[in-house]
Each structure stands twice: as structure tokens, then as C-alpha cells.
Length: 178
Image 1 (cartoon, rainbow, N blue to C red):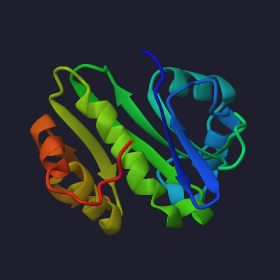
Image 2 (cartoon, rainbow, N blue to C red):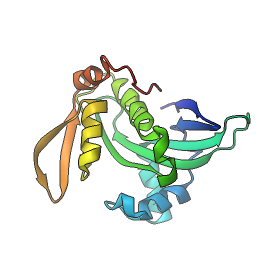
Image 3 (cartoon, rainbow, N blue to C red):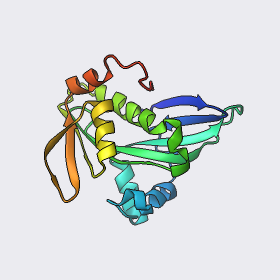
């Protein structure tokens, strides 16, 4: 699948989201996996990290300088879609470095994931697991997701069909576009 990119400027910083496998350093993913905010995962061997990233669609979030036409970007976040690119997507490993969480980048990252999922020709369902009630509300609002069943082990399963994703976009004045 071809890589996709989205760019946005916030203040004096330029941000990029890209699905290019060449941009996201494995070391950044390992550091993210080791961060307490990603309590559900842990670092893995270099061989398993390569396999993990080769078998998923990873959206890397990067920062640059708004006034510099450079292609140098520093990774500051990520989200992974485990998918067949046709009928199903599992959203996982959504992470943004703490000092960049105040710029609306999380909503933008989720909007780009949502765009990727909506482009799937025969999408049956997009699902995820979350242990955070705040994130649960975000996914309900931004992606039209709903909880499946009861909370188990601190987690809830959430999902949306294509129509739910589209409906979540309708009537939003401040929807972050990709």
C-alpha cells in the first residue's frame, strides 16, 4: 500500500503524519513501548519490532519547523492500524509525547486513522481496546465508536462500522481535517 501524508502548522511548528515505514525509527517505537502511558505493551526484540511494523499500518507523527522547508522531522507520536486494508482494522498503540499533547495533535492523529479506515472498500468494523474513560469518550465522539459488553480487566472493547465513522463526521464544526 502506498504511503500517505498529512501536514499542519500550529504556531511556529510544522507537523507531519505519515504512513511511510522509512520515517519512523524503531528506537522511537521501543521508547514509546517502554513509556508508562503505554502500560499495555513493552519493548520487544529488534527482529520482532521489524515484524510488528512490517505487518501493520503505522501512522507516525513528527514535528518540524514551520519556517524551514526542510524534510527533517522528529518523531513525537504514533498510532498503529492492524488491518487487511479491505474489511477490518484494529486501532492500537496510540501515543503522543507528553509535551505535544496540548496542540490538538491527538484528535488530528485519530482523524487521520479514521480517514484511512473509511477508505477501506468493504469495511465491516474498526475496533480497539482502551482502559481510559477519557479516551473512550474521545473515540465515541471522533469515530462514532461504542462499547461492546462489560469492562474486563480494566479494558473496554469498542467498535464502529463504516456508517458510524461517517456519522461521527457529520455536523462537526471543529473537525480536524487530514
